[in-house]
Each structure stands twice: as C-alpha cells, then as structure tokens.
Amino acid sequence: YTHFTSPIRRYPDMMVHRLLQDTLDGTPSPKADPLEELCQHSSQREQNAADAERSSIKYMQAVYMEQFVGEQFDGIISGVTDWGVFVEVPETACEGLVRLREFRDDYYSVDSERHCLVGERTGKEFRLGDPLRIVVKEVDVVRKTIDFGVASSRDSGGTSGGRFSERPSGRSSTPTRGQFDETRPAEVGSRWESPRHSGGSSSGSTGFGGRSGNSGKPSGKGGGKGHRKGPNTTSAKKKRR
Image (cartoon, rainbow, N blue to C red):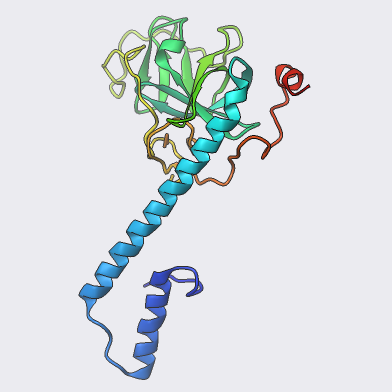
C-alpha cells in the first residue's frame, strides 16, 4: 500500500514513481536504508514548513488584533487546558487565551475527561463549542500571543449545572485558577493537525484553535492589517472613521 498524487508535489511521490518504473523495467530497486533516510528527511522538512506557516499566521493574527485591544467580541471556546480556555473569534478567525484567573465569578477546575471548566461553587461549566463574550486584553506581537478576558458575567456564556459534591474522577485535582501562565502548545485543540492544527503547535495562543493545539484543524485564514475586513463592532467602526 502506498499513496501518491502528482510526482511534482512531493519528493516521496517521485521516489514511489521511480520504484514503480524500476519494477516495470525489471531493474533492481535501490536498497531500503537510503530510502528510509530520504523519507525521514522529507518528513522533517514537511514539519518545518508547517511550523513556519503556523508561526507566520499567528504573527499576522497578533498584528491584526493589536488594534482592537479593549474591545469586545463574541467568540467560541475552541480549546480547554489546565491554564484556561482558548477562544476563537469567528469574525476574524483569530484565537486567544482566556486564563483561569479571568473567570472571577467562581473557582474553576478542569474536567479533563469532558474537556470543560467546572465552577466549584455554582457548577457552571464552560465547554468546547460554548459561546463566550470576550474582551481583548493584551497582544504581544513578538511572542505572537493574544490574551482575552471575560467581557462580563452577565453575558459571558457558559452552561449552568448542578452542584458537585465531589470531583469527577477525570478532573484535575490541581488548583488551577490564576496559577498558570502558559501559551498554547501545538497539539492542544489545534486545527493544524487535529491544529484544523490541531496541529497544533509551537507555543503561542493565536493558532487556529480546537477542531487543531493551542490545540487540531489547518489554516489558511489569518491575515494582517488590511488583509481582512475589520470586525463589525461599533467601537471598531468608530476607530476606522
């Protein structure tokens, strides 16, 4: 079993065509060891290219979102980690991190089996796919990260639930609120490999998230200033005027 498309697309495809031609011509095929080395080299180059693409998209997303610091947007939770949730803004296809310390209405812990945050007092949950209204708090273009905050407790989203008398077995027992200061790894909810990208992942919090990661699903959506129409918010319109 093998796979290939056009031999102009990837060098391993050319290798397959050559092996097939050798078989048709009745000539001896090359030994396996050199072919293995070529395959490893090609795989590494492919990974390098994916990392470069992901990094450039995250950079342009940070450049674009820098102009909207302090403004609010409707987002969708695209990833859940021990240090917070990643939220994607559909209007811009940009993703940022809401750290656990930003959820101020309760003490939240992570249910790793169900991929959600659960309020210890209220039982309120924030799950993958839930809407969450966010405010752009900080953008670091050098680190290619976007930090969000929760816009308000009234319209922030989430799902109400009953009280929990004990932790579910799959939930992390580590206190998490405000204790983590991390950026999204490539494999966390990334649309690149799962990354989208899902894959994921290089560090940073602006990779396309969750249906990959920070976490997987691949890209094509990002852009810098002027590459995409600005978000349709009142404050954004005033700024452009």
